[in-house]
Image (tube, rainbow, N blue to C red):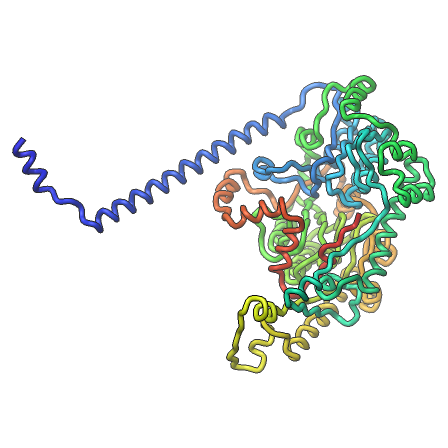
Length: 600
């Protein structure tokens, strides 16, 4: 006892520094262990989910199937990646998956019927509706199987697609949003004036139709913009009305009368005016499929498309999806945008792959950054020297979206595609008044040269800076027109006549030489095979760039920043947040369509 007490007396307590060091080391070790355990747990959870996902989407057993195309979900161009599918908080479908499902279902003896389900919420564009309508029509022609369309509600593009069905049913309390087309542009000049912000819009003198920057400098449409918008929405509606009339056994005059009077919106009037065939509930459609067509199981198009190897073969056609605004750099898989570096890499990979005999570039973009556009245009030209490059235009392929297309071997567009808009503009804000009068912030300057602060957003552009920017946009417009002239084998003067920033529909663009033929992605793939001298039926279709393995994506997911997670949530709850974010960070020189234009 005595020796023990003496030992305790001789032990010295740890000093403050050692105590702090020990505590810090303990905290670091604990933090590291917690992070490692958490990350391993996340991986185990996701791998478990993946296993469940695989079993869910495994081989579909049994016969007497109906393939359901669920258009109550948001529609994108390309199927989401494996990891995105697992962690996404919202479901969706893609044109790619639907086309694959329809192509296979036509020859599948297990499939008895096709079921289109609408909710008015898919965000389907007119061109996507046209793409899918053609595919549904081809499905019916090839196999003669019934196609039933049902909607709780239908947007106009959705209704346009539904007219390809043998029967259209509507919920007794639903609606058909059938009222013709109108375009609405939001302008911000009044807001900017109140804030004390002045936006300088600089564009070539000949580009009166290049209206994107006008949202900051006007309170209404310019005459040129009103002219072009009226022309392209009329082109789309006239085309759609003719097709709707033909498919529903109506005259174009009857279709327009219904749209004018809104006598097709409410369910009883939609039935009376022959827009739909019956009013019923979704369960009634399921009962109909079972009783009349012996359907025992309804499977989604997404799952059905995953159930088979799409067009297996050693000879390949590469498909590259360019969807969203054109921006520089690379993406991390969480944003829908045309990242210049990613598209350049995909084109290079496909061009250098000996198994790939042709490339299809699927474009759905309003345009964007000039630097990224130029890089991708150069990459298309380089790839074309090695193998055919076919562009398939979806809803939008305008401005920078058209520049990256113009050197393709062939360009395929839908009649309702919006394209052209060959032009450029620059916008420079001046926020000095806002800071000075609203916030009390002032600035002062020291310069080594006359225009050292000539491009400052704190004060108006200097005359020299404004002249420099004007020359910049004029020079690039000349370059842009020449790019199109070279790619389309036209003279500069011929392109300039139809350029000037003007937007055209695909139907109009074919008549003036901006596109080669009208059709969708399947036609573009067949043209690609023909240009490459290969049999289309014996080749496989592969998406580029190749998706990284799941483990690599999981590790990269761990590095997703809190800022990026916040951005993803804001995109879900704030309308147009992605577009606002793009505009706040974009380069001054842009080639794009008007920003907040709605085409209903």
